[in-house]
Structures are given as C-alpha cells and as structure tokens.
Image 1: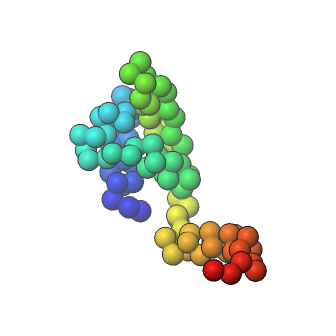
Image 2 (image 1 turned 45 degrees about the horizontal axis):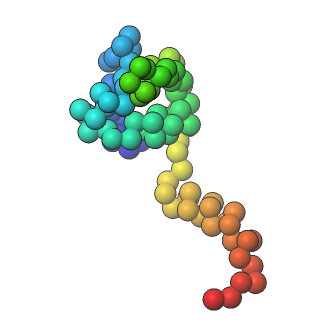
Length: 94
C-alpha cells in the first residue's frame, strides 16, 4: 500500500467521529484525497462521504475488510490496458 493510502487510513481511524475533508488533508500533504479514497475503497474499505457547505467532501471510515484486496502494480495495470486497447490498432501502420 502506498504511503498516502496508509496515511489516509491512519487519519480516518484516528478521526472516526469527525472524519477527514479534502481541505484538512492538505495539512497532511495529501493533495488528492478523493483519488486516495477511491483506491482504498477498491481494496475493500467502506468509506462514507458527505458534501459540506464549502463544497468539499468529508469522509468517514465505516468498516474495514478482513483481508484487503491487493491493488495491481503499475506494470500489471499497464499490460492490462495495452491488451484491451491493442485490438483497436490492428492493421494500423505508422
């Protein structure tokens, strides 16, 4: 798990009642909180969100998985995308 994902989970655990907003996350050098939340959700954590008056989202940790799903490493994701896109370019010459 990447450093920022671990940091987001740590903060969500510590701040269970008050949650964490995108604005607050900046103080912890987390600039793309929605992206980190999305990655964490894909691994099995249940995170609730609610829009605040300022327009930003606040996130709360609801439940943790017993065994988190691993995220594919960068090379595996790249190969999967290439395999999906490659048929589109069959017969195309540069």
